[in-house]
Length: 118
Length: 113
Image (cartoon, rainbow over all chains, first blue to last red; front, side):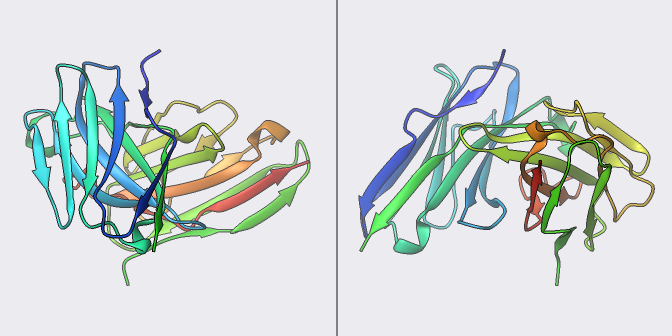
């Protein structure tokens, strides 16, 4: 069936380096993508999102890139800090529609563990 | 403070004993969802609700029921729990125009013996 997956289950970086977390999706009908961060013992926390009519979106220290040709999504974290250590999930939504309407159904990837060493 | 609350946070039960996990949000959000999280499988959506009395199945609805009688509450019901429902459960909510900004509850860890 259609699914969202991750290339790398773990990523270790040094403090101050840039981090790139990758995600592959297989459903060409997916039109909205979200990255979440989950710290140990907590629920997921929204980081950044992107619609399929965009190929790049920037937030504070984070950038999401979308390549629809190869169905690939990435999250770039600049100047990674120890507080960024967490599990990162990508999620896709099918048929979110124009004007903000949505069917509410999200499919999550398995997650990547990011460890930042001081 | 804007939040999603779940109760109980931890629960140990036995096979077949009906249980309910409550979820409540104070942000007047239309959308609410339930997820389960299992090692190696990530977060999987169980059910979601787009408004009062409007619910739909997610990816893994078998063995679960939900109801949305009030906007703020979205309880998850396990009529006859089985050991394969041992998991970490998260409730989430968002407003209809805030797709990504789901607010997640703190999680409920369930063990079914």
